[in-house]
Length: 391
Image (tube, rainbow, N blue to C red; front, top):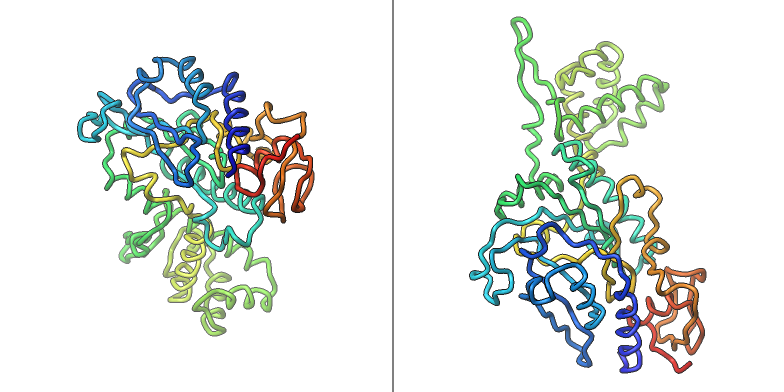
């Protein structure tokens, strides 16, 4: 990044912070604070082990600090400490940490950041966010007031779970939550229980909640769809599943026709081994389509720094944007996370990396000097695809 570009971005970031709407976490004085400044060197310098007192003591002082320093990135700790400004982690006096989830397009299955357009990555990440929120609400019982959703300003989303009962969870307990959300080493046999029915026993899915309920819901929907199909289509639907050939598909269809009530009850032995194999296949499908590929280190690290909502992401110039749950469906980060400060004017840049754009009205950008909307110019310069040109 050239000096002209760096100076321009730092100046405009400072202008943004002079009136930025920052969302400080609960008990901000017990958090560690950190930032990455704009520097002339190519490396990244992290300034951390700051306390709120170092920055002045309140939200207004944080804004003044950010206006003055205009860093590329700004962070606070998920953890709360007795003395957060101490330089040694062991001396801070850890008192608990928020439960934080991070979804990044870099970790999404099937997404190659070098080959997939920025807008497509963000859309895929938003789909994964929906799955994560469903798991947190349906399986863990969290509500909207406890879940704070934030667009990271880069390639994904953060979810902060604010619940006092979770603060003291250690890394191991948080890893168990991660494993559940990602269905890592899921005990598939554990989704089924044995119940007494008269003089016999039955093996049935655990339908009260968790992955057992999810598999049961998929089983019931799948069976109902089969019953409305003709035989040829039903056979094709069944044999499309892994491990189900023509013979087993015929067995399953017979069970579906003879004893649909038992299947609705979650009886995995209704009609013999065919239904058991169907449940196995649907379990694989459910754990593939309903998991959320969260970044494990972010959740399990009880001293993690996370981006401060309301700040700017130095790699895009977009706002780290809090999103009310009721507005999530309509949220478009490439529009809604654009800082108002960067709207309504144009700047001259020299594009060094042409190609698909991802923001603004144009879909592609050509190389060389040109005038662009400022938020587009900031995006290109922040991502290293353009340098500031003389006006």
